[in-house]
Length: 230
Image 1 (tube, one colour):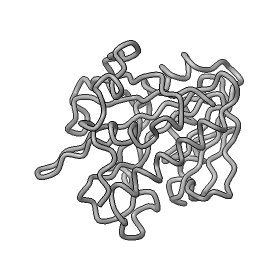
Image 2: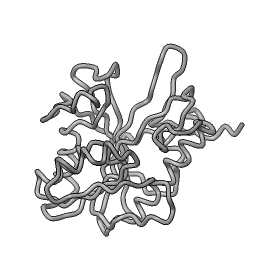
Image 3: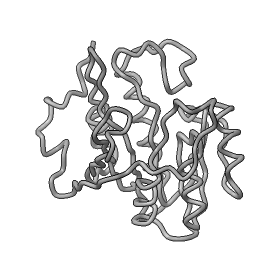
Image 4: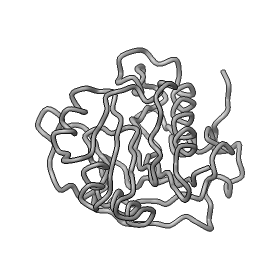
């Protein structure tokens, strides 16, 4: 088995850029609750979304989320006067998200499909579906099929985000929010592995650490990996 994306394979300053990284406390605020049928699912903090929309875009700019989920990025983008487009593989989630939106749209599609064109956006904010090394199913196809391996999942995820950086307009940015995962038996350094998989294929600006006030979902912090457009 290929042993490619391991934190120890790289000098620490290539993984955590000391010149750019910052820490932000975050209460994981949500302005609305998901319906009961989705109540166990996780969605991105609105404070994180607001921070990067405010920093990296202006009113009227287009915001993109390739893993649209329940539409949180798009709802916040509309609230802040931006246009927004999202993709989502799950029809039920997409329909729910679209019910919250007035002008933005989430399209039902498989974001891995190379025939799908990504929008020319000013900012992409995204939190992908996570996978532990021990998970038996592929989160990128909505857990419909067995996964061929954790490294294949990371490789596909990296390919998606590399495509995103190539679709950004001049001065655009990509922000990927994710966490290193743990359970009783396995530690999965997802944030570090994705960084290593993207490698030199996109211009990495640094990571910012979000510390959750209430150890959200059992984790004390998450990472936002920040990239510039090509």
